[in-house]
Length: 229
Image (cartoon, rainbow, N blue to C red; front, side, top):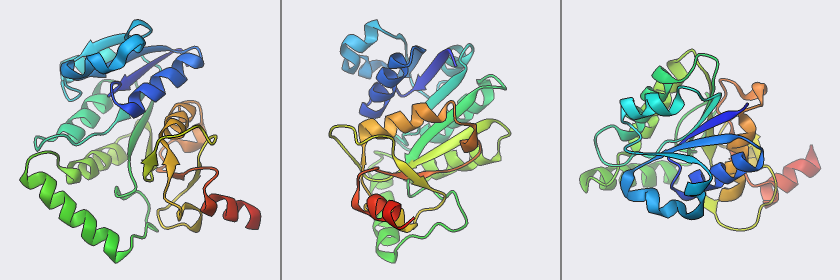
């Protein structure tokens, strides 16, 4: 792994991933919306930045052409298939041998044993309808993006994050194959550790074509599971 693309680099997760990648000696090229480049601060001097929408196919083609791995933050902005358009562009233009790591939330299905409480499903449905009605985002488009990824023959991994929080690192998160696993019950992950997991996945072939659901290493549910294992 020498050169890494980060699609959606200006957000908190994207910036954490960029710093983690730089710490590992990778060259970084980042894509973010032009109005968000100011968020990068001093990071803009350490990476190559291509400003523009992350679903701009021409821009993505340029960004990922020489990348050994691509880290993509799937954000379903608006109601014009932003997340699925971003995913499709990365799938179409990344090198055939590149490692492709995508981020999303637990709400995106990825395993036949995924289990969601009824209250969670109702809340998610209500939020999806509200966000679509006011045209802020289309959460279902993140699900569509995942469907496109699962159908591809690329070397992909979809990392499904629990509720994120700020704070000092607790180490690399633990993961389970499916949402609803007891070790995930605490539903909290430090954002800096989510980023670390994403970057670590670039060189972990055991995660190729898997959909790990993660939780913080020092959360109560993770510690209880570790003691009982």
